Image (cartoon, rainbow, N blue to C red; front, top):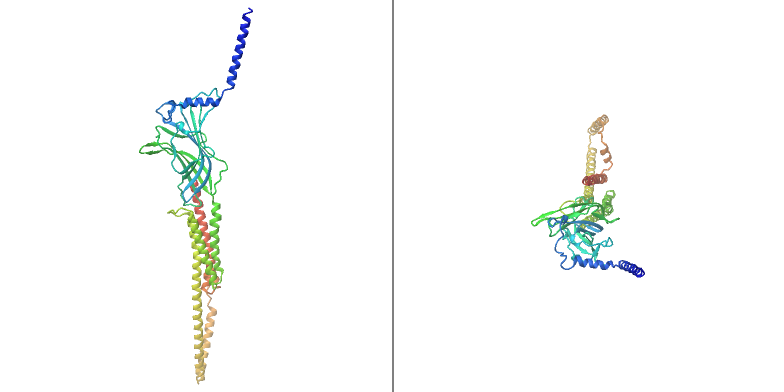
Length: 447
């Protein structure tokens, strides 16, 4: 009994020591070292081949690999109307299942493995089909990572900047809306091997407080755009971004200045018709300014073959300014015609007065008194009868327009007065037709 008791105590002490040693070992596990061991285990030579695509659904090698995609739009820097393109910065993410990359998560303590080298694992051959330019971000380190989860799921995330083509229809410019697309497709794998799908829930996210200089992002839509070629059918995803152009900028920079130039050209109607230098300089200055304004607007737009809404506006405004200049030419011609007519009337009166003086002198030189008195009596009787006829005859009635125009005896003055009313009235009618046509057409397209 005495010998067995010390042996039992030694066994108990030995068991306690082993438990303490095991606890110390568990407490000092280096998970970074475990990550290295797991990566060497699943990605070691002869164990993983990045050239072979993962198995399909339910681990079958015949089915296509499903890759789920989602985007995060960080910024949209510019939308170029002339080049018909836009620039965007986004975080692009892909996620797929590769059962060859399964590993032990150490009882939930190891959530995922992180890689920075994309060539270590198989990657989908996705490309942006409407891309013009693009680059990665490498400051301070490359903005890319790959996460491998214990069940074999792979998450690939990268930040990129792209310049994408955006074909635009500028018929309603600047009252238009434009739809720009972002297309992503497989380059080499057909739908039999690789299928892209939008991630469920919220596939596209946009940064809050996204500000654009001349546009507003109204909404975005996700869709599929699979394409068939001679080599097979390829999976494709697209995002349609609907942009609405901000009209306030164009109202201040284009429409109001054009209206002011047209109104300034009407000032010549109120100037004296004899002020030739003032009216000519005013008309020519407004015409040249309007032409410069039109050329500056067209310089920032592509030379399209159809007529834009801004072309109609500037063309009509230029026509009104040119019409005001032609109106002065007509007034100048009418003024010279009026002066010529007045000179003709004056010379005719002088000739009639000279003829009447000659007739009176001939009558005074006659010797017979009877022959002199008879025409006077006859003339007096005739004049009396004519006056009685004029009394009984009612004068012709004149309408309001003729009565008002009779206040202006010369044709040149009448042309100026008619222009003061006609030009503003026609311009107001044009504004009514222009805004009702393009604004209602825009509402119809939105519906």
